[in-house]
Length: 169
Image 1 (cartoon, rainbow, N blue to C red):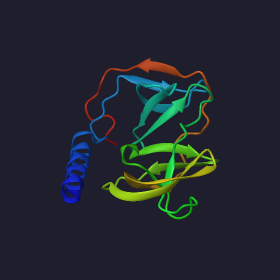
Image 2: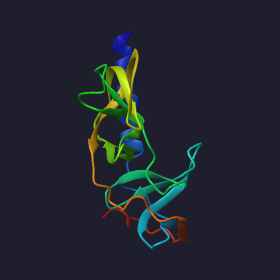
Image 3: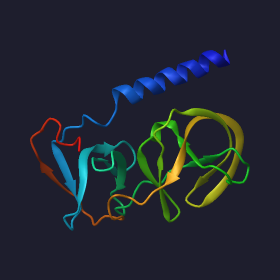
Image 4: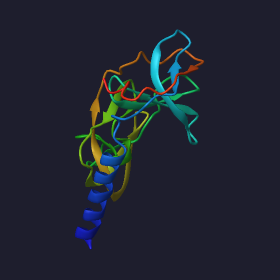
């Protein structure tokens, strides 16, 4: 049963990487901050997060910019240890997305998700021990965001006709 479960996770992950790759995004709505900083392609409002979901073509990454403070969305970081030490992981669905934790920014690496036994999580600098659970995760790596954060609010949007291949640079 565990082999079937792992195979299922592998096939779903592979399908997502192949079908939802970022190379073919064609913009129609471009997002800027109030200082005129180009942010990227506005994909819509993130459900339940109070944030703008934006694709940044130069880095081929996504970011949820919070309407509350113009910063990247906060995320849970998961650890195999019981004290939030060791390799930090993000949930597998956060691949290529920039998240903030504490004063640093991270992204989920573009690798095949793996199932790890998670024993603690870190959110907003607070470590919590949890019941051991198996989660599909990717390693989290620290990053210097491709845009200056927090961005100046409010955001502005500009309609631009789609240009095939424009964002593939």
